[in-house]
Length: 468
Image (cartoon, rainbow, N blue to C red; front, top):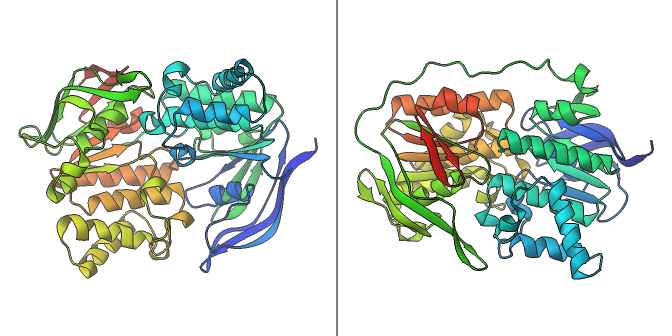
């Protein structure tokens, strides 16, 4: 089978640091090549090289061959980055489908076919929404449909199963398998070894920017085993509610007005308590967190912090209120300025929200970042040169510099390798054990939720199903 794309002897260096060193791979039509390895191993740098995209200031050596301009599609780990925030999902997909010409009926049929392959439930509702009104899982599947409509011969899928519930994840796995069966070459970048085992024809293992192994999944991946987080349960929290939502009914704007996404929800958590929020993609988990953080103001009901009502909008909150409730997003890349070093942006939180002087803020930021496993040379770089896992840890550090009373973690362990995930969970456990920090842990990872949380709230279709 002839190769569709090839990478030979790829070396990428930025500011004296080598991101990948001598990487080679061959991508064939109808086959799935998986790149695996810990955060920072060079997976995304290699995958994006197929698109001809490199970090700013990168020095590149080696050879890359692709079918031509526009022949390589990309499904990023953070799908919101490639969706136009000012356009509804349906309008975007119809515009892409229309590039091939045809009648309105033919264009609509192409969109519907792509959505079926992307395993997108309730497409009629999703197509009416703007990207920020979609869950991370819904955004991911819209981007998969977008790549399918563009007709690429190669698709690079960067952590496509990240942050999705088991049912949705299996749907994405099946969608990618369908894409390969149509003769499209797939390059899968993933920490999800279960998905890799199901999909990959060849696995390329990266570590420190180098290829250390390659071959079929059964010879290159560790034997699957039940993974659990073993740590003692925290002591029961004491005191009244640190945060509370009462009769919360949140809405999204639609073409015909508004549609409810949360229905009369009442929840609370005490100081030092961790509440896990679980449910399928689109169940309202992220909207709940955004209402609490002041990022979604279209709601009825009340949001309280230590018994006092919080302004609905972020813009109406004081610096003290902003510092008190911090949000760590699933899409960590989107919250960093591409043009400023990570250290400066993390330190800026303490300066802006707590009035800390710049030198002291930088010292605290360095200590916090290094405590989360980020090397000194990494934190001086711009965000574009860090991996998704490294950026996720930097985003957590930035939130912690505000010294919050409530920390909302939205799928922050998604897309991380096992050791990094364990390190993050350990940090969160230690934080809540030694402080009165209240954690809202939005996740599809039930193992992590069971290990970290005192209680778990299960949502379905915007309603609270169980809490306990």
